[in-house]
Image (cartoon, rainbow, N blue to C red; front, side):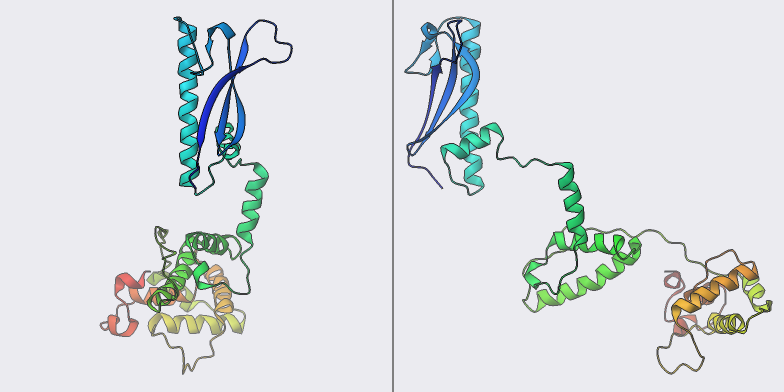
Length: 293
């Protein structure tokens, strides 16, 4: 907001117990009749000061340096005024003084850093308005996935991709005008998939386990290595939950002497890379390259 009147005045002021004859130079800032004073921390003799111009007089280096310094302060005052205008703040003598002495600058402390961390952990809400979605929310969502949900980088990116599809639908329906993902970048970590060799596959095939559950899981795993077509419905084999299957497969790998982390998805990868099948693309639904990912 523009002011109606604006003025600067440099004048001398005697400090308490000052006996050397010099006076401190002060700056008075006046905006619409309201005044604020600031000490320049510089001094001048009264007989070497022009009250009308608000500058030191004399042909010497000390006077020249003082006047140059006062000119610099005046420039900083006008810069402070511009800063207030750009920030849509009122141009007042008090606000200008605050900018000059740095009172308007936000200080950062260590406790604030902890509070910011705790704020990032406060992700749970009953709901969130679509218009509240922004870059910061996306960033905090990824932070939550990795810290609270303990997701690895690639898993977090996968969830983020699903979320991005929802955002795209919101934009297409006119529910959201901005793009929260604008400028947000992710990078997948390179992952080397686990694939069984023919020798390792033979070891698991020929191994006899003491418990029926391991034999049962081994048979289902081998069946998937040779017939990897993925079916969500109409399955005939009594398949356990994915969590239990992977847990038992870890035991099977240990007992069989296979030093690899087996999961049920390893069966499909093994088929795509180890077991040759003429109609691989038709059966697996992926190319050999895609089967590795």
